[in-house]
Image (cartoon, rainbow, N blue to C red; front, side, top):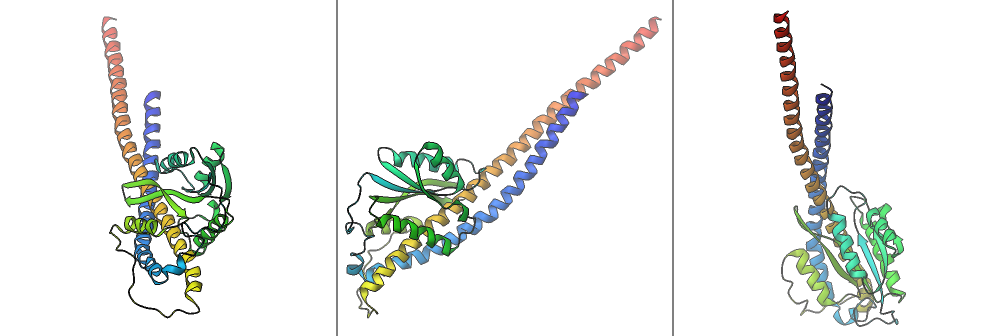
Length: 300
């Protein structure tokens, strides 16, 4: 029964695929949980960091990163887009949703890109956008604070050149294990309202006005503290985006592998039914041939 053997080979192949996708699902589940926990742990710190702005409000307003206080003449039609995707595939529509957001944001403007993730780099090159820098090699499952600060600092340096009117970060926002959405976050210049809105969404609670009624004695000076604090808070915001993107990636891959495993199980059942029918047909045919042979022998 050559056809039956081919079906058995397919059943074995599909079962092996199911085992692989099951293993990948479990791995992604663990990584997603870890990334989600890190993201959740970072949220209270990001929330508390926002209170720093209330300590040195006037001095912070003089920062070149604050909206409305940029000192350089900027090119109004030139935008720097930071695209965060995965290094690998097999994660459903995770990367594709971010790509759609890139095309949407780059429409009608001169956009240059910084990519974090090999899939983002490939997309930017394929679509003909200018690639300013790529940090895919240092973008792993567990990005360190040093790596994040390095990328954030390079983005700030590019912004301070005055070549770009604004910097946007495009990534996938983690809602839950089964829900993520591609979003665009204005990164530079930053405003107090944008910071509050960002914190409200990542913490899931309304942020009260950033005010402080007490007095602080600050050394060496309030301006020195403000100049150091603004980049620090920007690093925190960028790190939060990285963590959200990583949690979303693992969640999307977990769901994709779960769907693949269930599909393989369904396919095995279908192939088993086809095999049983083919086997039954072959047995019936053999019985018919035997019966026919016996009948012919009776005539002789």
